[in-house]
Picture (tube, rainbow, N blue to C red):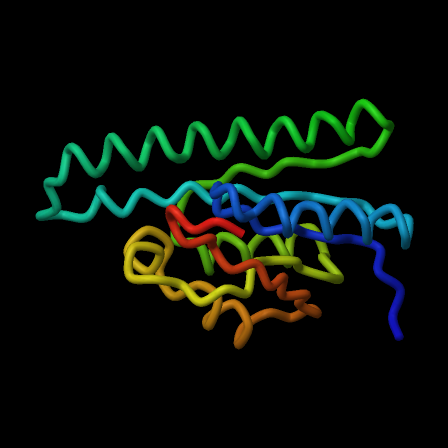
Length: 153
């Protein structure tokens, strides 16, 4: 088995990404690997012909809140001495992530494995399927199904 020296966690800037970040932190500590997290800013509302102002506002609020939650988790680990590099890029998610994997010479990518719903396909595209086929490195898929709204566990 190859040594894991560079780990990249893919953040879709949703609350569910905290689970992937948790695994990234854990594996980084375990293997002494550098840890990066990528936030891909994809604006599906920039497409010509789309005019959905209320949905676009909701999307912006969701991104901001999710980024704050993820930042809190990252900062908590930084206080403990873990170095985490954050990469923020705009563009089509699959291409942006592939570019960063090559630039940073990533050994392991960690991302959510849950099935994407229609809204996620609109917001992020079919990135899981594309990434799995195109990745030049190993992929760790984190199973974290979104909770059903209103359900108690």
